[in-house]
Length: 109
Image (cartoon, rainbow, N blue to C red; front, side):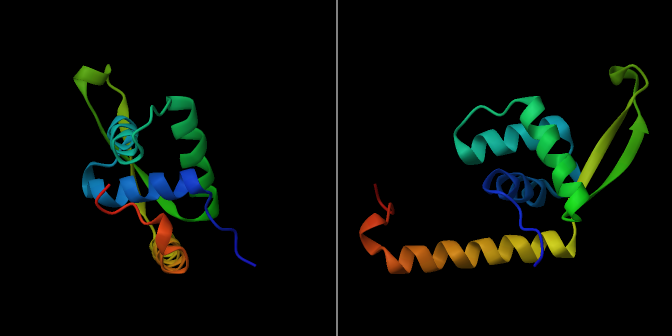
């Protein structure tokens, strides 16, 4: 059986997908906080990004060094086909749960 992402990893996958080419640490953390409505620590973020990378759901690449970062490079992330498949499966499960439990629908509240 394939290793599936955790709930938080789904949140980070969605954040990376939404950010497209601008998905790096700070932007991913900010987007995940916006999507979840919670504070996201860098420790939490990088732990999950490492897991997503090990599971093959994201790839990372080094950007160019910049002066404002003291000559350091940003690490950019993108979702792999396996990560996209996992996101679609998660969306399908959410849809099934909502259909099975219509009294939990939060639309309009």
